[in-house]
Image (cartoon, rainbow, N blue to C red):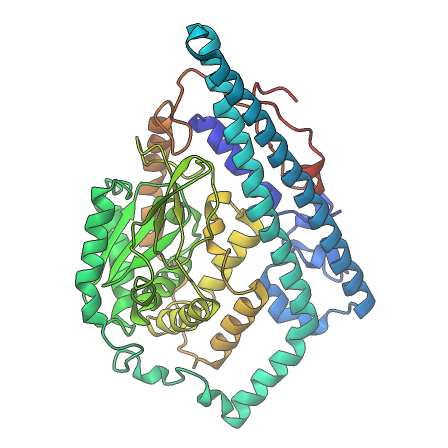
Length: 490
């Protein structure tokens, strides 16, 4: 799959993740540009960012029947959409079996042209099957999880906000876990951080030997900027060991922390964040995994570079701090030249408790470092509502329900003392973005024609047509589209 095609697929899938049933294009208007006095429908309200909903939910009037009807509608639409895509997956599997039998039966009798045709058909069917698997198993559930979380917020947040305000008034908030925020840096979240340094270094060495880590972005300015932000957060956190930071040349929107203070951010994350507080929020979340020693605890259950075969694709299991369940992401993550594998990031045994812990601690660290504490929520909302790239689904799967995560994050923000002026944006961030743009463009051009993560077997194949959607289309359009063939025909 070439670079332009990958880009169009990513954009198409990002579009589908922004959509909801029967939502007109006009409903995409941001709250700031809505006419005063305009009454939004429930569907339009679910388009609004989490932070807007937190601030306005108490003034919105939707009956229990309206919410229940919307919930049933979402449930039915999701079921139909996933069911159709699962049928596509099965059909592509049947076609794969047929093509492979034809290849096997032909044996040495096949001439080069017919063998090439069969190779291309199998290769494209694998790609199409992987696409439908990811859509059914990852992207569609993410889209509907997000919409249902906002329904929950409309129903439940007003009462929970009153309780949070009551806890503030009574002082009960000071009894929550890790309420001692004035002691950040002097408290111990989990003992034994220094014991993780050797384990983390061994993990990094193992991953590099296996060729599982993409190369670092070749820009001293970008690397230095990210290091400075990470150091600022680390100095105001409970991390008690040296921090090692690197930006990797990969379009995936992700960051991960290995034991012992090894923090990796991927280029796609830097492209996705809108301001420095969002970046700091993500970094703080990942550092929290290290201060709580989450990955070190989980590494006792499996080796960090355990390798297994899935659907005839070699996948690597990498312990990270904000990642997805096992599934083929069909090479929308690219830049790992020559690996011939899908790098599937998964924190083995990741628990909801660990993620909620990292959310709470991360918000505290961003706050203590002087950043706008809503940065993490705003980035999460962007990923869930307006971006939704398939190569960013690692943010959502195997994590706590969206509603619980957002509400607990907002509650923690309410409980933190006001520091006054909080950093949202900096000129250094804007300079980083300018430096990053040509690097990303060059990387995409360089990737054209090079081996991708998945499609590395046969050169010279015409890739199949992919599902592409424009913002404003209802999500059902994804499932009403005709099934693609390996040759690109509908």
